[in-house]
Image (cartoon, rainbow, N blue to C red):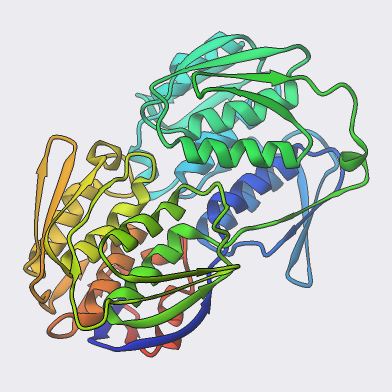
Length: 431
């Protein structure tokens, strides 16, 4: 699909999309829950749909009622010998240890860019837990055979916190005595905060020892909450909303509802650079209003995105419209995304006339000149597509985005939301 966006003034009020980080974790914990789980405000992105497909392959029964999900695990074992995680990095890293709770041999597969992401973690850790594992030279597909036996282990947390989330969920379900996971060089700590918060909501107890180790406390029998059913409401998504907030700063005044400023989501950190660049930011209960500073361009900012690397794309857009050179730290976290995002951002924004330099772990963006309308490509990366679309709103001509359907991975309603704000957006299917 090709999307064409004309320079536009935007305004209005939108509800944030459902958080796929929250939704996918809720699906995993609903699978592990012994009673019925109700999920309110479920997400509908490709990653969310992949998570629902996975839990059904692993034995859950999913029923949709009045925009709510009812999930029960009636068979307590996989009903298929293969699960497909789509292009979801969280999906494969979180569900693989959960699938390994079973003694059934299961193949873990995926699609697109996920097939090229490194999965050596499982080769290193699973044999220590009594799991047979075969990978495709450290990549998908992976063949596993459990059951996982929780033991005290030490893991590397430098590539992604998502591996730790999967182990914490599987350990919480299977542990029969106190057991520890020690983590070296843990990245994206806020995502672990979210995982721990949700584990607690679902009746599990995990102690966080200053992010250096985690102690899983065994469940002695079921709590009343887990017997009688449990309800979880999926939060509004700060990752997707970050693009909307940046759009408001550069092209109008908008209000985004459904965002919890007390959320454990890492990407709520977008508020800091928005304020640092002198944008107008009004924070109220359950809504954020943003606009550009009156009569002035925003100023350059410096921000460390090591723990929230998904903010790089919207922050690059913001930096392009700020006077001076903005600096974002944490480039090393971008290599194994849907694309190599540092290189992809550099290439696509160069087409717009925006200079991006990469130096060690730093990205430096020179802003202040009007980005040029041109033809860009998403590289099948949902966040690159959204970044280019937001950058188009105040460009000096129309922006054509190829492979624009990539947004369906996390935010299928993105272009419709831009239209609702008044942006001139046209979509064309490519045969």
